[in-house]
Length: 271
Image (cartoon, rainbow, N blue to C red; front, side, top):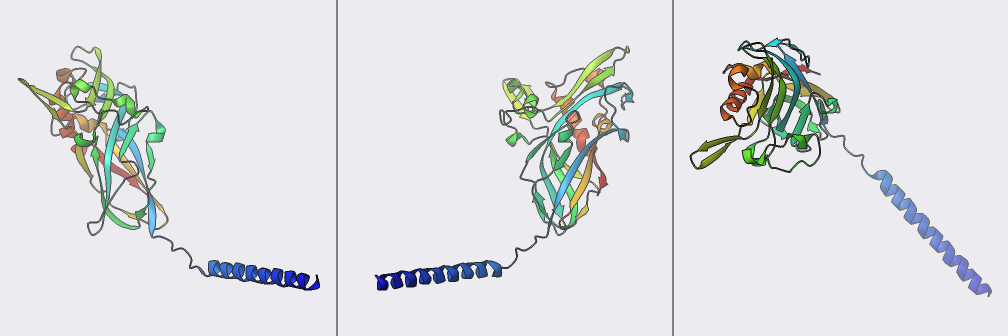
């Protein structure tokens, strides 16, 4: 019995020593692991604002006059941008992949500030670019199932997919009666005899004077302004009296709005 007890004590002691050694070794290895490197990256926040003639848009107020002389008001502004790219010095480009298609709505404040979830290399960036709307190859019906995006569905008979933009408002016509207008852009449909062609009215935007410096572990805040009056002038004067209330089946009207869109967006503050 005595020998058996001595054996048990010896065995337990050996196990305890082994456990202590293993624990100490693991702890030592853990302590000796090199610290994780701090990545040289930062974040970007885009803030969307909507102006008319250099001042913040005032909704539901008949106070604006476009280049055609139409007195008008704006009640709703909704649109998509997509394929946002930040161009760094030296030609490097970083495209936003976390949200490839971004919805913006002046009546939903949460859509007006975009804290992009992914990080970007710190350094100097030359410019910002994106596509207004959604390119035809990606503008697919039923890809959105929840509001508010799903509410911008474009009729299947007109090509399907989604509106690129809805600007809804009112204007005083040639006899000073107040009429509704819907400046809607989506796929254009052109019928020529038995042939139907669908036209992509989305377009690329390269923001002038949009360079900025992203500081390590910081967030760059950049304001992007839609100048609403620019949809209705340069290079074409858009007249509500000529194009009327609804233009979803009028490719000529949508083409004019798209062509006028080249200078609609500008950069405000950069922080």
